Length: 354
Image (cartoon, rainbow, N blue to C red; front, side, top):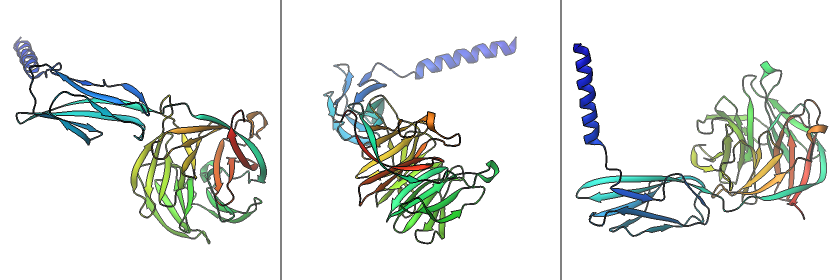
């Protein structure tokens, strides 16, 4: 009985304390409401509403912790979204009054203004491709294809790094540690950077000799599904999300993140990457599609349908998914292939219906 009385008294005290501490949720109202979705280019009207007799010293508005503006009244603030990165954004009103500070926040989501343009392709040339290569990374540089081939020895595969000529002949090949699954690859500053699957380690090779120069650890983008560069930064996809990690090319730390969205929402399963004329091209894992991304905002601009390139009904039993994009910057040529595909295809892309 004593314990029961104590429990009842404790419950009453907690209830009383909770009532006394409960914030006044109707004192201020922040517009927009959490969960509101906007299309890029739409203006966001930010407005703090409160009673006419309520006085404040000032209110500071922030977007993702970055100060936008300060006001001393309830007038609205207009936020332009034309160049804003896509995805979730946090709007905060920080209210100052008599030495006290209150914050009200709202989560909004910014999507692309329109659906991606639909593109198709034309095959201009085919090149033999080693069907033993489980292609994870592909790049063209100085007349040579550089390819990262993934696999674990215990599963009957063996990761490798290889150089191939324009006719598909393997010029150089080195095997990677049996316990390592090789993933994305890129060539920059006479070096080859190769990422790995679960091992969270990157390898740096001499471009000419394929000699291992060094390695590095990375945590963000821990599974390096895809890798490319723009000459200044590396772009790394990972773990089947819609995120791209922008990395410093010298010490490999993450500089910023890109979240990829179209007009419907996040676009996940970004895989092998290529940087082409200021845009990012990404395979979508387990599909026959490549998307084209604006690296400044994360907006999906185009979608290339490659279903008819090597149709599922015609694929050899061992042939896996489309994966591998290479770009000849000098010749303006695009090459694509897949895991254990017998051919690499030089293709020309064009809008559907043209």
